[in-house]
Length: 526
Image (cartoon, rainbow, N blue to C red; front, side, top):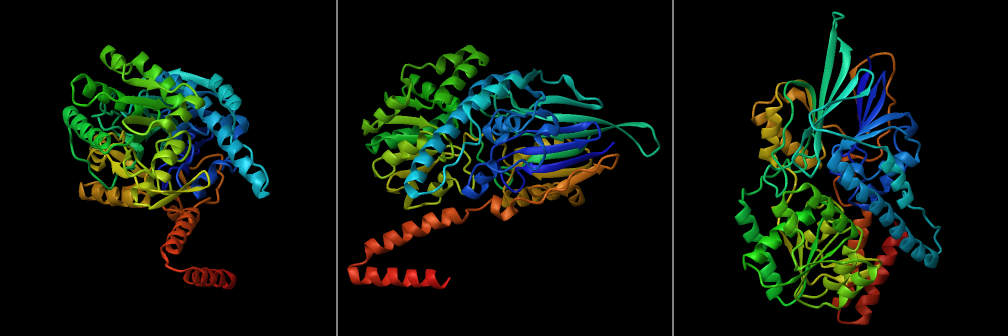
């Protein structure tokens, strides 16, 4: 039996999660996520898959987040016709998430094409459409935690609660094999998906099996440990940020992932309002996906949490026209909008309307990938470009890193040690290079054999067992450095704003003309 794994995403970076599992019985994909972050990384979404979609027999999905599920419609559009296995809550969330993602692709491309026409550039097409996404939903197959599911002859999967998101899972895969002596043998692999903290508002502690052959573990926060906080301490930290923002006299804008993060914030805000910890404020949830996801969460959550999601201070923004009306609100509003990394969606309009106002506050509450607008703001940018316009950043930029659904280094280490013994290899994935390297050192320091730890790069293939078929060798699409740093698009935007600021600061037109002449000469000689 041939068994190999190719790392088609989230290797050296934190998005685009996708593993190609090749066996003599057929090919299976674990996750099929969208790439996020710098423009160079996002461009991978438009290129061809590094495998033939029609050859894939099944998809095993860890959870609904777009960086794990967002290219499923593209996979179906490219010829995949098999089942997509996921837990029931994941299927429920995808019912809204994938069509919403298709709508965003269409909307973003429509706006870009209007600009391309003015620039004389060719039009582009969306990665997929809402219709493509709705077709994909027909291939969803719900599975229960802990049940062993036959995927292909000789290949089975079992889902374990990963504690990261409603319905999230780590996926154990068994492949029938035979040992060197000819006796039957089962090769066991475990794909962690995203591991939760065990302390999130809605999720239980992550679980998983022991004594496996190959472990694939995420390392998003492999280089840091967060402060342990109780529910009360977390809410008080949020209350301080909200009170400070309101007292500053402007709006509080919170870029938030529409699924899970928004609902966690709403439950905590409802508790704070009900206990008199916050002055009465209008909370506008401006994300159609967040609204639909809130309905799914209310269906699966305990009654108290479900009621909290419907607090009278909360206002779901129904349409684009209502969203645009929020530009007229100058103070006292809490605006929660997607996307969480500020790279698309309605949050861009709210940043455009509020970033330039010093009395306003932007509160970052989730991980920001390298090259994303959120990471640029966290880095202290003085100017950013949104929809082609240069915006001065005068608002307060704050970060509250207590809502992450990802386990930190200590939690990841504990979860990994609970999976031991791992007889063959441990692969560190879903992490930027620095985070993976730090987590590797922590593992070694805690007694895990150095020779067992591997840091695969994008499009690497590892052969576990050689049999009748050979895995296709894939040419790497990006290096690790390109996956986890700002790209030339980021540096270009930064250079333009720096040049603009330098020119404005000069005290004469002669000096400005001299600087521009020097820049033009440098460009001409390059």
